Length: 541
Image (cartoon, rainbow, N blue to C red; front, top):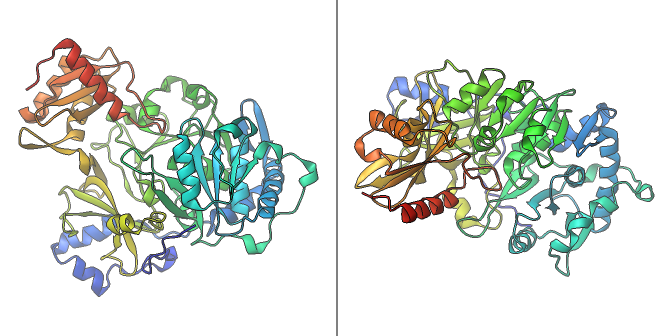
């Protein structure tokens, strides 16, 4: 496995961060006036808080031992305790060790949501290995083969029922977890101290969906994960006695928030079956994309104490309804910045639905195209720095050098280009304005697609919307539910934005289609728009 180790990419201990008042940092802030310079630092630097443990593996070891009798995982009416999880993962870890897996290796997890999935993750971490999750039945065989070969994995973990769907090369070994985890003949102690991960060791490698080309592996370290999952607010208050839903695809970075967040904090992980709604009605903590959360009947989920969304823009009506009965976080952060790097509770009476502030030991900068800091209140591209910044793309130094850059405000560290647009509010929160790719030209004018969507969602009848560029002259929008009035929603756009921002077509739908990762399926929506325009003869501009 090739770890892209840049000389300047170091995970600094959160209590010894470089001083933002240093000469180098001040030089980088020269474009700003004194007031904005002070606010740039005050707003952009998260608090300095040491995670409860330096690695996720250490946090897991503590929970396995200190809460042995507590329920660790529930799935399909069955449950296992932390003690059983500890014993089962020891058996699997020692079988993998016999096949040559050691600290620093990668182990592929090609399966679906299950107790065995959790056993596989814990076993890999006990060996100091990085787990590489893919959802069999969703990921094409070509993708599975690419992932296994790119990581150099010696061992692929799966289930007996899925074995015939998993491609295995001659130098790879397939181990079916369900044939190992409960076999008393394989009882063995946990792997020794030589296998224990260190903060800079990789904990997982998450591959992008590959919709724009070959999937790229993002290398996430134990230090990266500990920094978000073992500090507040990223831990979402997870603790023994609380139940955390596991509803997301295992290949999605937010699934690690569910799984590792729950287990490293001693909570009970509740793995969903076919119904997300049923799971949501049985848990205390729920993590989802806005599109998934919007599909739920929140009136039946009032027992939830904490909910968090990320992965795509959140509709204001959704945030207002959920925050009326639970602590609701609208968060942001690409995989490359370890799940999320901003968060803050939302309240229905807040004037702005923000994505919050930088999480502990992390930074966010709003910069122009020349990487110069912008005055507070001006829109620009968000760059993320701090302990959230992952260790680059697997075996892709060119892409790593394009998206990861030396941090001019914290010399000796790296920052990551999120390709998200944002600006600081006067009270130090970040407003999110969609992706850089969503800043388009229509009839020669610059249009923020997210701004059009927000205007649509201001209509009382609209719960969720999305706007896409159809061609150089036309925008198309989709709203839900199907009872939402297209004319009323379009009127809200006309009243708030210039004429060239108005969508040519507004299509109501019962629910907006989602990808396997729970995000809006924009490719499918564009296909639906083309079909609708072709069949109805809708006039384009």
